[in-house]
Length: 212
Image 1: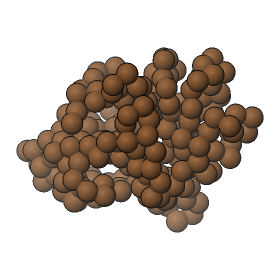
Image 2: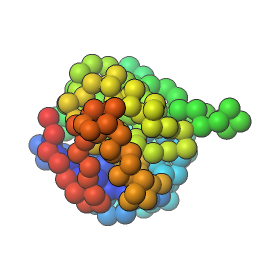
Image 3: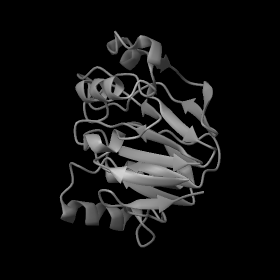
Image 4: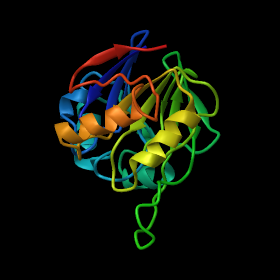
């Protein structure tokens, strides 16, 4: 399975001729959707779900399908037959890639800000994208897509998260809010030389990694 990073929290997965794009939001180049077979959306925030761009992609490719939570699915009126709402405990197959769904809620940003629904996706039992929550994978995984910076995170919590998740390696995502210096500080603390101790594989825009 090959993953390619596109803007912030978006990754593109390719395996056995199937292409899946996760969370193509407002910080993502629309080219990430070109040729995709499926789009998976963890939650409704604009940095993960850019409705206008997704509708353009759906109009351009009548075979493209979407899997997401019930709240996002409800916003995609007019294309509902091409959208599947999923939640905790659901599982489905995308061209030979088994996908299971985990979690229910976005991490707390502040008590005054309402929480939205958030789901994480586990691909082939090997690669886990938690969306905007520190969801621990349901079992051992090879690769964790690690939300490294957000209004709802602090580094100490991320250290505990990567330790508990126990993945062989972590790939930082959700990094658009960091400067290059900030990214270096975070990765030093979370990586093998810091208290996080994780094997980090940092990808730049458009860079790929074979996993699993």
